[in-house]
Length: 306
Length: 306
Image 1 (cartoon, each protein chain N blue to C red):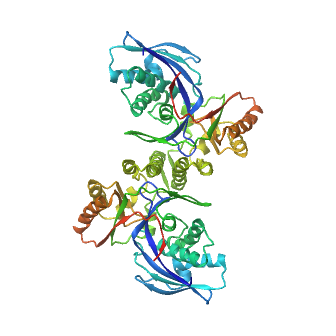
Image 2: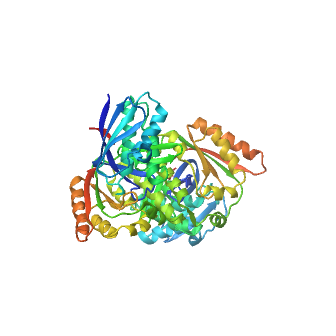
Image 3: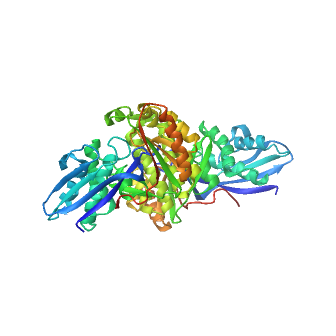
């Protein structure tokens, strides 16, 4: 195998109560990438379509993660990377993670699979760090493992694969506004009330139990964020309207995808996800903000060869 | 059925990462209680053995919970309660909860089971509130439901039954010192670092996943408390030594039972629980503090008729 083409999916991090630890993988949106073995050593990004991103490997998230794996594997050849970017950078659905994870997942295939998923995640986190300033895995892990993941710890890196009820669908609306990562961070408190933290970990435990038990009512009861959403939602115009209308339309829950501005909802069944999509759309179509809308089954496979 | 005799078990609340929400039920220690229908209306405590506790129903936790159920059920008869107290009040293994839960569980049986376990828990919480000043259910729920429980929320009351791996054993050491509840509360911060809270909810999610997956290694990796233990452990002499020695002896984890002073450990298998017991004992036998030691399978039944 000399080259492969892959689809590296968008992902939703945090999932209301699971700030910094939970995430899930989407099916209907992702970046395409071609990774090719070359006699020329090193990592060379030879094509980028869709968005304007740097070609120097050291300045590109896909390049940085690729270099990390290359420096570890030390093959007597190199790799070329082509990026067909479909996920808009800064949309809050794991755009940088898709790039960072895609290159190393594909390289691992071309190298004969020397690394397991946790090791691939660790390389991808190096690329993610270029984009966000610190190594985290809440988007990387669901892209690589698929389904719902819980990043139990970063050091040592431990990713848990949480079972996904089969009828679970996500609806995502991406309002085309920009939230600077620095701004999304600045609104977060460094200290929180113990009482709210207790509510949060009760919800995290409850959500994990609900996923194992296929209990959609309990998923609904658990999808609350007492800590981050009250602060960050202020940065997203019409967040509360979208949330309220989608829950009225039958969504199990709604929250900020990653650090926003995308808003995710979860629903039981595709039909309900479509009804919810209409409700979300209705809110933004009354404004002058452009938006993109996605309905997706939870992608239990993660990155795949296409 | 005119009267029943029950065993109302001791319980461990918090379980390291699950402060205020997690708890589990013990098998080998509990209060015995006799509850009897009487023509005389009202709740009458007619016998208390073991510890010196008030006979007035309004001042006794078992009486307060019983009155709450009686006022709701409004039967044309009353109940007598005999309490054979085996769990030392203030030991940190759910002494007041055993009393508060026992009376109403037994009354429900004698009334022909009009209430479900969640409703019984709600009545018992009224009794618990007399002892602790506020309604909580982290000891009540495991006494009534058995096994491991997660109190997802208090209002509305929602208790989740978490599956218990069959080889899980608890070892408990109760050093005979007094920690005032007010003191155990006073050492708790009202605000905590967001970063530590994230670690805590990752561990809660991970522990629930581990219980569902029968993954003892993951149980071990999840039994950490970044929030409460660093403060409260200072109130328990030799806590760190007991914790370190029991983990060296093979325990999956060790922590404060409830608000202490009892220390619990969890182990895989009865044999290991015994080895851990020896290690815990060794620490306190070098001091002048008296102690009690218990080894117990996780009691998946909860309160039972004997």
